[in-house]
Length: 225
Image (cartoon, rainbow, N blue to C red; front, side, top):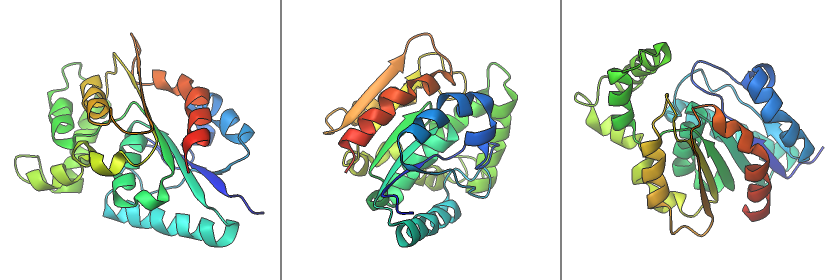
């Protein structure tokens, strides 16, 4: 069957493409609205926690091309959080022609700063140590050793591209896994974009933005070309 608009949901760190369907809070908060929209849904496996490196981006290129060829897909709206949101920002800079709009929920945009946040880990959160080690493996060391690799993966410095794409950016004020300061910096850089919403949730932690699904999806379906 033909389906011209597709919702692309990229999973978080440590998960895979099944996350949308098997993680109870994601399934409860996002999947009903995705299904009700009448859009196609793609929740891809991108070889684990690759944070949209070149390999993951190439895989996604091929998946979206397949949807264009076999389902006449014309418009891709990305709706992802955490590592998935960070990956979406990176993919939008890599292939802006494939991203008609995006909802970014509780994500990060400056990998150098985020690496040091993970390394400091003042609250001794296990997943932050896991993410730090993953980044070291992906980029070949710390930001002191390979600063150019972290800069290349930091979409905070590619806002000229991002300004051309409708973005709903939502972040919890008390996010313990991805600091809100980065979302604020990105929002400041995108403030003059023609289609941009920044939604900061007071007193809310990392998973809080999931409840904004209806507002974000309705807006994106309206403004995304």
